[in-house]
Length: 108
Image 1 (cartoon, helix red, strand yellow):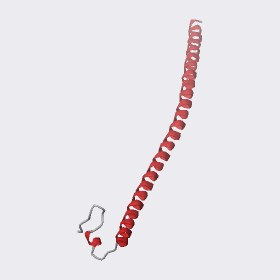
Image 2 (cartoon, one colour; image 1 turned 30 degrees about the vertical axis):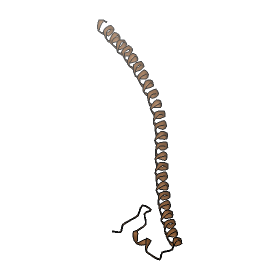
Image 3 (tube, helix red, strand yellow; image 1 turned 45 degrees about the vertical axis):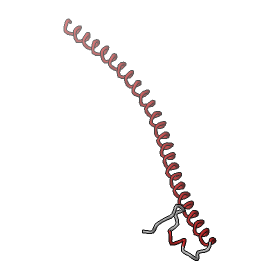
């Protein structure tokens, strides 16, 4: 493992005879590499955020659709309950009528 200085360069990069320009070039290249890595990490993070936003939007659309379907189902359910009560009342009337007819026939 190489020893690094506070600038992130290996101690061997400060070898005697290395010119200031070479050292500066190496430091610049290291800084550019670090910047490129940071930019790529940021891009990945933004892609993740965009994917999350797209998923949230899709969930919102699904929620709206399901809420609309639920409203329609509730309306239909209430209509069926009303129709069921009406049919039950008609059946009660029909049963009472049939009973009356049968009783009238038995008395005759």
